[in-house]
Image (cartoon, rainbow, N blue to C red; front, side, top):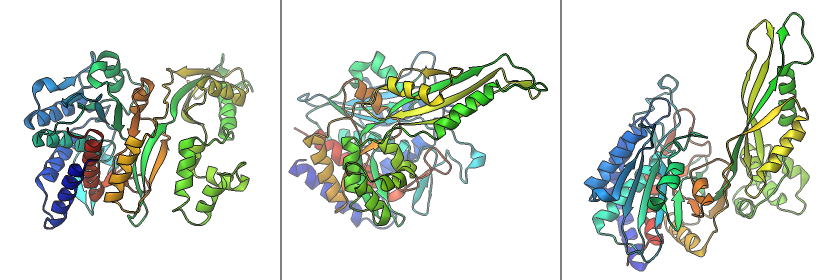
Length: 468
């Protein structure tokens, strides 16, 4: 980051701090308006429309000074409500572009289940509530606002800055996946040296104190398998032990008891080394103990009993759906299940398939991969990216460590990583330890965290794409 950029950022923070309570700086006001507009457009798969959201953000960018030729809403054939947006802030071209990625679709939300209307942005007790309030419209709104602000400042970076807002990130697999469609049909519009994406961010303790700021440096490989057992069936009055449901249930029961081998990757080893510094009591001691060679067995058992950490240290496969039988008074002719696996980077997908065959130990259970796994090579934690993240984090949250993390979930970043665009999950948004209702009820993000995330991303983008 240049001295000029640091000075500008410091001045902005001073300005925001000097505002009276309840007042907003013009840039913060614009951000709030964009965020509300985006949140209040329903972009769920069952009843929403990401094309409408993409068009609304395109209108914002054009009103902010972008030429129509630099803002495109791209709608795939057969998916009129599955639109994406790509916008470009042109730089000098001295370096390959920086890509800013966020998805604008959200998981479904039923009004009757929520305490508040999920498609109205509600500010209450220091939180924003709405479907997509955190995942991922907080980041999407911040990126749109930053693009407008850079344009209005006359900012000319040493590279183009590209914004891509995509659809169907939450649908796996999807024939309308926005990032896949852009890669296949409009690669030239999004080709970049590196990308910033969701997936990282900070963690708060119960009192709201920042524990660490995470930078996602890789994610597990997503692979679903469909299981099926077929049988001639018959009358339920004459039952047989050869029952499709029994075969499938027995196999799934064996899977429930199976653990894939413990393995620490460089990124997860670094995570536990750093996390052990601020975790106290038994958990902190266990984090240190599993780093030994061999790891302490009792500590490993306790760590494995915590799903958030178990997911970081091994491949996982879990049953997620069941469907069997055709009548209450008939033996089942068919029993089906879905097993979803999250595979550690570097592990062979074929070996996971073979392991499932061995665990089920029943040739009556057919195991069919649902689509082809997208491999996700972890991005290198280069001095350029780490220096920028560490310096800005230290200025905004003194004493809060930056920790590389592995995502157990799946993001659009895996598709970029697979075509050679290193993608880093980094948002500057700190979230509550309970997950903030993401993918669940009453999704929320702290108001303070939302605005801080915008400031962090603005500074990070300018550090990675400095002006000439």
